[in-house]
Length: 516
Ligand code: BGC
Image (tube, rainbow, N blue to C red):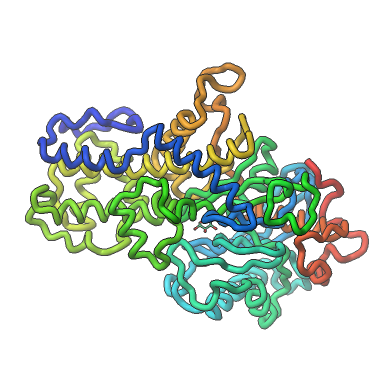
């Protein structure tokens, strides 16, 4: 047990290694297991409720999941061409890309620059935000196109927050999520102030499409894989987008759009169960919500997404220490553990990844980072807690994926996923796949083959770059619609072409056919 040699690659759960954990600590572990475990029956109940809520969000009355129509009207063909800019306003960085979609089907070239999002900006004011973003775009153009006389470049802007879009070049921020709290943006269209800041600086850019990261992920992934039906982000926040038909969207009925017209829906499923009817919330989830900038919002996201996993873990450890009968970190000064949001999801990843059977790395990081000396039983509890939080996140995430598949009657499909939790959190993929199996009652894989990688009927796979290539593709699809006179859901079709290369006669900014 106390050997420090590297063990074999560990299975997703190592329940068996608790032999020398004292009884009272085992009891605490059991309590945590009861609190954080979501069994098959509960998964199914959540999924059933989820399906109803997805449909409700599409009605005129609406529900807690916004189900935002995005005015991205169908999948790409792979034949889109042209040069586009993409701007991604993510949580930590601002990324600007220039993407060239060449004649070769499904190909792309990309150059990009990253700019750090200053922490103060996230709680600053609107003018500072737009000025900072416009400055970054200006720098990008000056750096990559020094001295060139440019046509206006069409831009896809990935703005990954819930926005009501009456048009693709419009978006009223419903509310900030992921800890952002910038004054003067909520309830307003974000496009005009963004464009004004560009104009003030004379930056040759025209916003063509405002998109969500999930829609970008869906479109980018389907560009190279036609089985992709859902785009997901499991990162700082969590959410999904899929392609719906207008006939299934009662809240668009007044627009008389043909029933079979496709339109991507940004679910904003982070808001699932804001009314707390079905999710098994723990007292720690309640604290996270209460102390967040937007209590009552994003109930599902707060149990799943990367921003909250480390905080959940921290809250449990502090609580165990406070309960005097538990004797957890007994007699130690845990001041550094008391700082909210001081542990991020990568801290949990590292614990789950600790290669040593005696959890030496976990022991050392608690000592160096927080000056806390953990006993062996404490380490076992810590490791089990990380596993429980990570597993709950993956299993609840699968409920959303299964709900969309069931709603759309997708028996088989690929789901494109991106985000730090999906890409970096240990076992997230395997745990999600296991939950899908339970939710969708699979006995065998595709074509009667055994279940497993490559054969599961629904597979969640790493996505193409949604906020780069996806944003460019959606800009391309939008410009193509303008050129064809199909201007449904486009506010300023004329302005969109003015001054761009696409406006010049004979210039083929995008390829002829759009239907998949
Ligand atoms: C936002 C979504 C976004 C997701 C992933 C959520 O907090 O509301 O718009 O897609 O995070 O980035």
